[in-house]
Length: 310
Length: 262
Image (tube, rainbow over all chains, first blue to last red; front, side, top):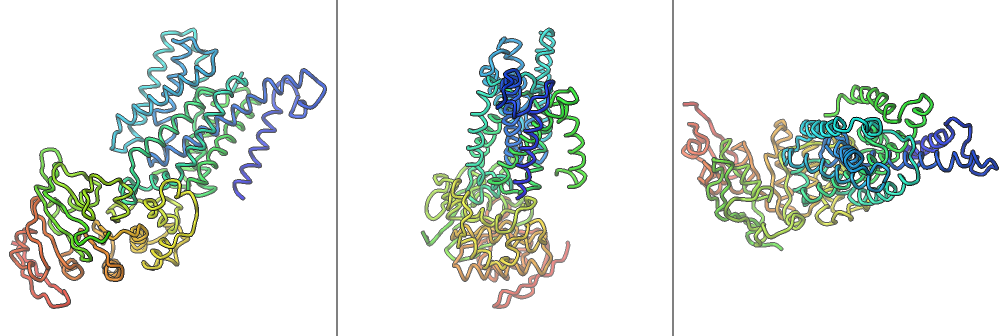
């Protein structure tokens, strides 16, 4: 029922998204006689919408996985090293590697960066489980690396800022091509791990006691989250707060069981990014700026209502 | 898989840095008995329980579970033979009692088997045996400490393992709930023929409920036997470092100690 409501909102957001832009063309233009309008919708708006849907779903999913795997409700792709690692990978590929025009190569670079970032956190945090604080440290180092690359190649600052901020501008079918398989794989693997994540979300001793080998399963969950994050970041950059808030919205809607929580978090993430991009196009800012500004407000409200995220 | 000695430790040594917490412990837990581990803070009793549960690998020595070296058993196989009530009790907001207790079936059903929402007779029976079935669909975070402890016991029972380990099961509970939990464990021990090992702080409770006490001191077994045979003023001094008088131990296990500070 509640998922149905979320689905309706998502459909409305998609219609709104495909209808905004400098020409008045909407979805119906695809079936009309106006070749120019058809081209605008099919070549510009449709891929942008689909990239937004898939990237948002990836971020929501990654956030839900991470919050279970590291047992911290503040965990999100941004602060676990995975998000900032993926950004660093994408920025390095476009500045040093000159691969900015090749979406598949960018996706690969972001994936490697995300895995390196996640691995770095794994090394730093170890078994302490103190991911919240150490994740911030790891992320700061990775963001520092990104800024260093920018300083070395200042002429690329404009092009690179899209990854730092998160933007759907100019996304094409080429960007969708590596993204949707990532979403499908991450979603299928994550849903397969749903029962494992229910156990991991409680406590390590608890997981051991009921017979779950914590380290390999948590690693599998983290790799899945890194994959989803990297796919999203390679396509649209780091879209702030989506990975943090979508799982909270999903949890409020369907409760803590992951076989319902994971797909719902993906839906909520898709809705956030598409709605943010539609709104952003109206007011003329990137989607990442909208999620950053609105997300901060939502975070404050949620934290007050629930008495924090402890 | 009912072995005469379902759980035993052989020459177990554990070091934390420089400190040797367990310095060669041997213990045999016989089928169907309830053994409590006693000792002052830092004597190694919780460490020993964690080693017996397979949560901690000993630096030397071995744990035998159902006759097999635990080191050679997979995590799920261990959980099929041994259930543990850990000391810490974090609660996932919104998770219901039934959803939590179902997690006790992980070892039997595996990662993919956990996805199906089938009605599991072991879960139903565990909820009933611990008297928590009336709250089965309530969120765990809405229950009181005593109720939660029963639910955690239900989770351990749902594993359907012949050995049950309890790490300070009465900590954080008021006196009434302490007695309730201990009575429940004893009833389950007798009804199901469970073998139980627990860390207990309260000497009187250990004597009242358990068949055997194993007292640790400085990482080795200082005394091992029936409470009536070994608990006396010398025991109090050696194990806890206090002067005291043991007043009486009657046949039903009631024990009274009067402790006089030096």
